[in-house]
Image (tube, rainbow, N blue to C red):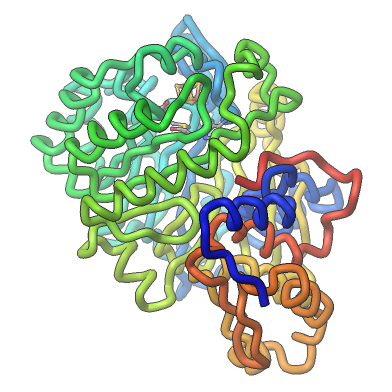
Length: 459
Ligand SMILES: C[S@@+](CC[C@H](N)C(=O)[O-])C[C@H]1O[C@@H](n2cnc3c(N)ncnc32)[C@H](O)[C@@H]1O
Ligand code: SF4
């Protein structure tokens, strides 16, 4: 068993484990999207939609793939638009897709959550917001008190848009911050003042939005311990209910706009670890509870309560307490999750619109889950949510089939000795091993192979 007492020993041990060289998925799904194939098509989605019983609850995700500004650091699937026409035409296509999906779901299940993400959903005009919400509400049965959350760019929202969203039931908002430091903002192509962000937070609270999330990012160009400390202090002063602290994923081979970022200006992996651990400490000192690998929430927040009860889930948006049986993704590139598997819409807006306008569902790829995938998915999700896997419960659920985990468990016990505890009934990642969580999870990934798809840094 290893001891990792002094900071230097810990750092060199983490280095020996490959933490600073490895690239692994973020596991917002298992299998991850690069393993989706065209073996899943619209016929699958049609069947899977039809099979959702009326007693089931579903969540809906709507993707708005447009931004007025295109931040250089951003790896989200979105495109810059300067004219209103492409957005207006996209909304019309979405409305057709909503009708198609609702028809396919003949049993009208109960919608418990609606999330608008992107891109920048607040690029929509108040009239477009109202129109899209009316179409959704005409097509689906929303449960009273359902959750409606919206990703908000503070530089592209105003009182009228917030009013339209509130009238449609928005009760949660997620605000992109990244970092408040002007030098960092200049290097990532995203100017955004603290004052503007503060004003939007005030507007949202005054409008009655009960729950606010903020996104911040470590590992950005020119980010230092003192710069991120100041930004974190400013984030805390906004008093968000939840915070997502993402590691900057520098993947210019996927997100071409990141070529605008000078790789020399990026903190090296060891510095990234120091940035994230200092920031985690700051949030905890401010009274936030750490959740999963990269989230924080107030002690009385629903996400904190879900985590305490073992109900935290990981999905495409990060962490959630959403227990719905199915997630229906609408819009270009949106991914749906059904008990049977995943289905992804055509990623390019034109291809997506072409399919929908031709009267077809827009699914172009996906994945049919096998039993083995479900077992691996459960282990990876529980690890990244709870830092612990109840192996006895897994055997109870999957019986002897859980034996597929044996090689992974053996490898984890050997490679991560001193950082994990493995007993026949439980796999636990020790608190000091938190930075290793994605690496440990990757040991249970049946698809990862040397020379396979490139991912973002493990830390
Ligand atoms: C769709 S965007 C945010 C919504 C809105 N458009 C905005 O900019 O405020 C969702 C979040 O993904 C995160 N993100 C985007 N690109 C990233 C990257 N390369 N690495 C890490 N996080 C990233 C950012 O924190 C961002 O706020
Ligand atoms: S961070 Fe937000 S506004 Fe910037 S490009 Fe990404 S989605 Fe668009």
